Image 1 (cartoon, one colour):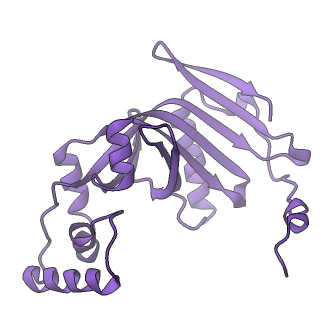
Image 2 (cartoon, rainbow, N blue to C red; image 1 turned 60 degrees about the vertical axis):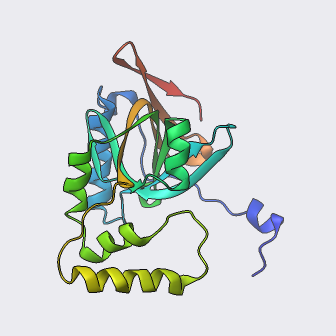
Length: 216
């Protein structure tokens, strides 16, 4: 098979597994997100908490990558990372982000926009301490997003810290912790036939969620 423009133009799937009506969607988008997330878990989707995180630098140039959702409540959506990484630096300059969840088996996506804040040190430490020791060590030794000479450089740093820590947990480094995306917009997208998808949108207006339908 050769990937050509013609091949890509004809690569399509007609979605038909479900529909989404305004009456089907909870008045609270966080509650609705949790319902859809539970459906994704029950459907045994591989890593249902995978989400695309989009940020922008000070010049407004977009950047995106995959991260993992590690908490959701009425305040927003949580994830953890290296504060000195590219995304950490971008969020420091421009504390706004977008998230996208896509569950192809359910023909669904959720799009989220909002402001971003760091989680407090205690919350970040509590989560860090639940991680496997190997993951803790990786967070300590990896200068995320920086240029390194080769993989051996990382592996040697890992082995050195392993020798020092033994089987004990390591201390969370100051440059690592959590963020919370506080949503101002949440959209629920359900694939439909002939690209006439259902899109139910929530906008936060003066502290209240306003629900509307968007054209596909």
